[in-house]
Image 1 (tube, helix red, strand yellow):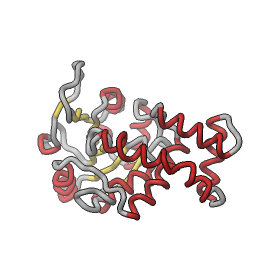
Image 2 (tube, helix red, strand yellow; image 1 turned 45 degrees about the vertical axis):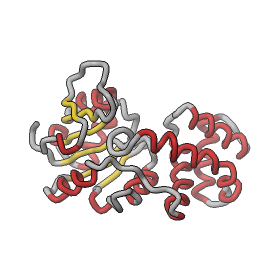
Image 3 (cartoon, helix red, strand yellow; image 1 turned 90 degrees about the horizontal axis):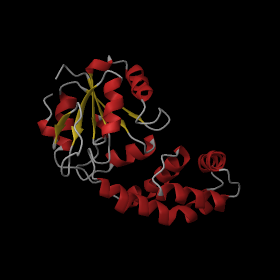
Image 4 (cartoon, one colour; image 1 turned 30 degrees about the horizontal axis):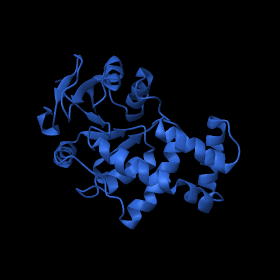
Length: 225
């Protein structure tokens, strides 16, 4: 592996179990979304999210917007206003202590070690930047946000598009060849590799079915940085 100046991390399946999202976060937001919209629809931030969802979903009244958002959630669609609203709902759960983020035990020690070496650490996820900050600010290993230098979400671009990784490299001001991307999704790794990045495939459960030009590990402490 060539020298690394920055590490960009995926969340689900990489630092955090996919089940935490599917079995905890998503149900939490889905159950509370209708009441949350009714209680907060007059707030500028929520109103702007609903307006954006109306355009994306082709619906007009708030009730129809909520139905459409729940439909997006069930189909795991990466729609920006949905991700923004989920983040606001999760914020209430984290503040109340109902939510605490799962973290694989090898993640926090590695992030602290890499940060101590002067390596920039960034998150790139389909979840909103706000949701990302909440996830890493309330983990079972404590608040990890002081270790992180930046966050990127769907406003940067789709995670399977090469241009998204080019934009991130430009934003952090680091040559692509000195950026390492960690993910559990081959198509994301392929896009990052095509943008000139180094890549590592996290295989947390089982083994990937297809061969690919990516180094594979099961834990962060197996990554030679």
